Image (tube, rainbow, N blue to C red; front, top):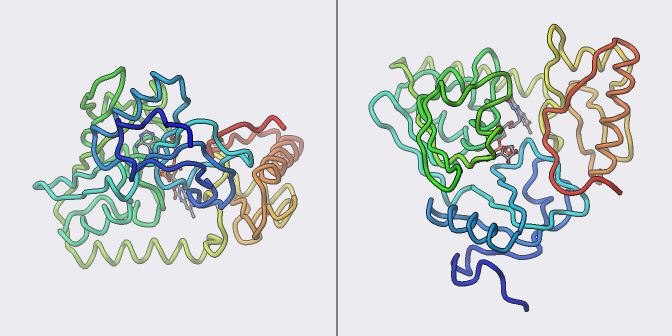
Length: 301
Ligand SMILES: Cc1cc2nc3c(=O)[nH]c(=O)nc-3n(C[C@H](O)[C@H](O)[C@H](O)COP(=O)(O)OP(=O)(O)OC[C@H]3O[C@@H](n4cnc5c(N)ncnc54)[C@H](O)[C@@H]3O)c2cc1C
């Protein structure tokens, strides 16, 4: 086998070739990536980025893959998969500090166990800390912008700590998107609270999710951003598209804001369905829906 640009840079045990991206996306679609690296420390993240740059190989950072649609052709480059191997979470006074691979469910659970309130909104969002900070994830009136104290980021070849203001959060947006930087870790500033009340609130929000969302099917959650003054799901439903399918990709019957994979959907089916939804909603209500989901790889064919 040809030598890899990561040989002698990253331990062989953390470099994988021809990895099916389907297994790294909650939508369960996607072809192979040339390389995948699962870093265990900051140093490996930086070395991966340097080696990829030196070899002119495209890089895509992936957390829990819950907001990504991978192309059927996969990705010609390296997936920097920041997950379980880089996911320490700890308490520091009123803060919870998390490495970017830590799942939000773990961050919220530790906060609750420690009697710290503020992360309840995030416990049912199936993302990593890095993905959630990057996207300014939010639900039920809470969002990352309300609790993030600082984020440590790798940008322009060095590590910086950005405070909340420097992150310039807005709806599903952060400064990290503008500079293509990698989130390494985050510190969330919380408030002392009653442990039982915190767990009760988390349980309530999660049962509301189970009731309203088609969680038994693969999806990326709400496929479209919330348009100003509207709800995407309501516009899609009003346009008569609940249950509309392209192949195995379907507008969920349970929640029209979700596009689900009923088993064998391809990325191509999902994109075709997305376009149909966009053009029908535009015609019916004059609103252009913008995807919240991000696309990785080539969708030209
Ligand atoms: C069932 C379901 C319910 C959902 N509910 C919600 C909800 O209520 N609210 C909400 O906001 N979202 C929701 N989502 C969407 C998703 O969980 C969030 O957007 C989440 O923040 C994405 O995190 P991730 O780790 O999965 O990111 P990924 O999907 O892996 O990546 C998303 C983006 O973040 C970038 N990224 C990931 N990690 C890093 C990092 N360390 N540094 C820099 N960039 C990085 C990626 O390059 C990509 O551009 C839902 C998804 C599903 C499947």
